[in-house]
Image (cartoon, rainbow, N blue to C red; front, top):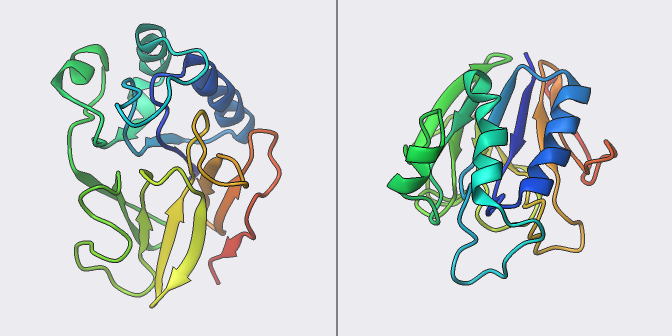
Length: 182
């Protein structure tokens, strides 16, 4: 199984269009969205290509393969436009013998989250900064934000496979060293 993870689109239709191309190129099974779908948020600039309705229509084409959680900029009106559940504070899936907890990062953080065991994966967004590390036995993943990155690394996507985790730029190159499941 391949899980393709992005976060913090903030209404940018072109950012999702480029991510969808990478999703197809990677032949991923599921699209994991870590929240902040349609609204740019009052503290962020309006991203290039800000078009929440077009973005919702494009994401909805993948609704049967989306796993999504609520971000701090998401609301009930977003759920009315999106064809998949997106208002949960977290979700859990299992792959490669590991439990993966997905959240946005504004309620549960890498330092303060529900109990996890060594080898589990904590996946979030919110900070707009890519992260891939192991801390106290827990693997921490944040793909950053494609349209509004807050790091010189830029934004990207995370890919979880049976063999490990990578964070890549949209052209498919690693932006952080990959982490192998061994």
